[in-house]
Image (cartoon, rainbow, N blue to C red; front, top):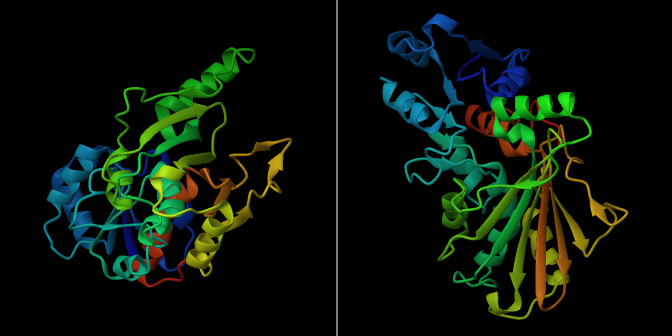
Length: 317
C-alpha cells in the first residue's frame, strides 16, 4: 500500500489527482483537516508518514513545504514551477531523451513539467539532439489553452461570463504580452537554447484542451530539412512511447474544415505531434489536454514510475 499526501488538493490539479487515485486498491490517500492546512506540525507529521508527497501549491508555498519535511527520505512531485530548473530535481517528462524515465524512477524529487513546455519540448528536443537545429535559433511559439489552466478564479470568471453574457463570449485572448511567461525558463533550459523563444500564449472559451505551435525557419537549421525528414526523426524517437503520437508530414487527416481541434485529446494522457511546412519553414504543432498530459496526467505518470506501478495505471492514452 502506497501512502500519498496531496498538499493542496483543493486546487484544479490537486482535485484531479485525488480523483484519479481515490479508488485505487494499492493507494492510501492521507488527508489533512481544513483547520490544520496551515498547521506546520500537523503537515510535517503527515509528510513523514507518506511514501510520496504531491505539491499542488503556488511556488512559494511549494518551496516552504519542501523545507518543512524533516526527513531526507521524503519523496516529492511538485506541480508548481518552483523547482523545474533546479538541478537537484528531476524534470518529470519521461519521454524526454533516453535516460529521463529511469531518472524519474529513482528520483527523490520530481518537478512536474508545465503544460506549454510539454508541447514545446517534445517535438523540438530531437531536432536539437541531432544537431539539426542551432542552439542560437530564434524561435517563435504560440499556444491556445482552455481556461481551466488558469485555476479556480479564471474558471469561475469564464463560467460567469458564459452564464451571464452568452452572446458575448471571451474567445481567444492573448496574454503575457510583455513576454515574461513563467514557463519560459524551462522551455529554454531543457531545449538548450541560447535565448528563450518568443512565446505568445492565449486562452480560449473552452474548458480543456491545448495546441502549442512552434515555427522554425531554414536559417535556424544546420542543414536543409523538410517536413518528411522531421517526421521520420520524431517517429523514430517516439516509436515506443505510448503517450506520444506523431502524424505524417503535412497530414491533414485531423483537420475539420481546415481547422485543428485543440480539444480532441481531452480526458487522455496523449500528446499528438503534427509537422507542417516546406524546405523554408517548419511548423511543429502539439495537441494535448492541458489538465491531462499537461498537469494531473503527467503527475500520475510520474507517480507510477516512482512507485514501481505500471506507467499508464489510471491513465488513458
